[in-house]
Image 1 (cartoon, rainbow, N blue to C red):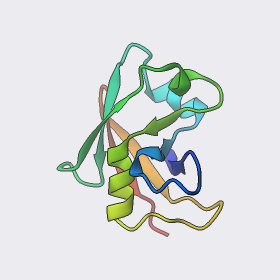
Image 2: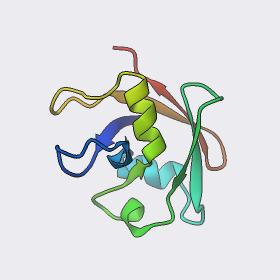
Image 3: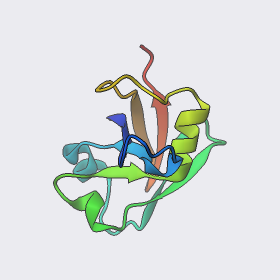
Image 4: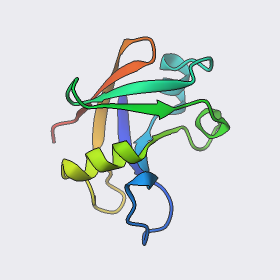
Length: 109
């Protein structure tokens, strides 16, 4: 599935906590289960893992559906994905590898 980097909150907020990945509603409904409390993301390398809470109404509503974590923000920053041009967030492939576990890799541009 194709996902995009996401940043919430104020432009003035420099914290990594406001970053994550936006998943489409169709992909969320196809690849995620409501009975999962969290998912583990392997960020381009099996040695870099991030546990993300999905047991919250905002992930399952019709407007938000982002995977949000300070660790995702740190990884995006450390790997040169932020900042990005306005309206052009980086894209990633996210592949399910087992229940509640996904491999995330950058899309080569």
